[in-house]
Each structure stands twice: as structure tokens, then as C-alpha cells.
Length: 284
Image (cartoon, rainbow, N blue to C red; front, side, top):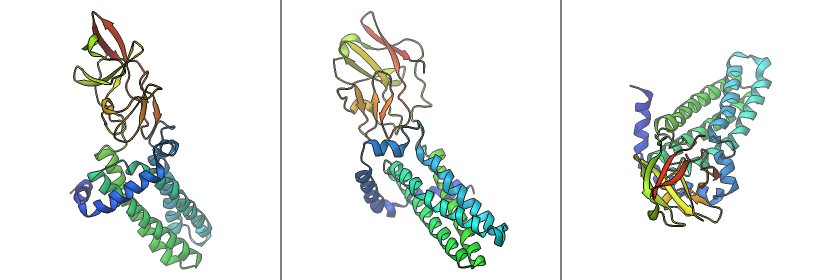
């Protein structure tokens, strides 16, 4: 039996749904949809921030465990310092993770909640190891450290499953195949001014938007979670807001102007030929 087979049953535990929904709403209220959300999402980084930060507690706490087991008495001080650094780094890591998790639902939300609870349990175990070590209860500290790294490893596997098994946090357009040759998508008369229009370019969803005589075109599927941009609002700066989680993209080039999205929308060059609107993928 693969480890993935052990994780999948957790996706269907609906017992967690009321707590998960309440916590998700609470995180949304605390974080909002502005600069804090973008910062925690990693919009400024061009990459989800949470996976980057997880290297810190995992690295510090794993190193502390190794020193606990093999470093002897002389390594106790270093193990203490590494444990403290690991526990301190849990806070920003958890904040970024909670911000990402609040945008999930269903199985992803259930697994994310279990992931968070396991991380909290691991932190408690490592804190207990620190207290035991300071009280010179070395053997007890060893047990707490081993238990802590075990729970942390299980939590890390669940986090990996969320990304690699369920696609949480990945660019939802990365495997799509936009046309690179000129492709007719609409009649020129069909593209009304200042009105989002969803069209198909050989099966690829494209959002058209005409303003001041210029037609803009970007991928309609939001890179963050696949939301339909044609159902979003366009502001005076010609940025469209995803109706699902509030990410904003510039219609002129698909650039992210507000998170939680971290990847830009694929953008298209547009031309009008024989009263037809034609698009092709714009080079990065």
C-alpha cells in the first residue's frame, strides 16, 4: 500500500468541515484582500511563500533532533538554540499557510486542517523536548524529539500531497496549450466596449475586453485556482478581479496586481482582420 492510499481517506472526513469553515472565514476576515494577503501569498515573490518558509522549521528542528540523538552533552546548547529557532519560524510559516488554506474547500480544506493540526502537535512535542533538555532530562528529551520529527514528517507528506497530488498552489494554466498562431475567436462587432467576453481559441478560454478602441486578451482561467475571470469586475485601471478569491490581473499584459495569485495570466496579441478578432499567445 502506498502512503498516498493512507492519506486519501482523510479527504472524506466531513467531521472537520464546520471547524474548517469557521476557521477559513476567520482567516479571511483577519487577512483581507489587500497588501497583507499579497505578502502572505508570495505575490511579490512570484512563487507561493508557504513552501519556501517550511524549510526553516523543518531544517532547524531536524538538526536539533540529530544533535539530541548523536551530539552528546556538549551539543545540548546548540540543540536548544536550533529548537528555539525552529519554533519561532513556525509562526510566519503558519501565517502564510493559513492564508493559502483559507482559499480552499472540500477535500483540500480537510487535509489542510489536518496538516495544520499535525504541525501544531509537532511544535508542542519539540517545546516539550526543549523543556526536558533544559531540565537535564536528556532521555525524555530524546523521546519528545523523535516523536516531534515523526509527526512533522507525516505533516510534511500531507502538505506534499496537497501540492503534488491535488494541485494546491500551482499555476492552473501551466499545462494548458494556448494557440501560438493567429486564431479567429470572434467577430469584431461581437466585442462590445467595456464588457468582458469569454471566447474560445481552439478550445482555450480567452477573456476579451475592449476599452477606448483597444481589445485586450488574456487567459480566462485564473492562474491561482482556476476561477472564471469573465465573471469578475474590471476597474478603472483596467485590472480584472477574479470572482473566487480576489486576485487582480492587468488586462494589458496579464501581470498580477494583487494576490493571492503569484503567476501572471498568459496574455495574447490581438489583431482585427477582415472584421474578425484574432489572437495568438504573446511571447513571455
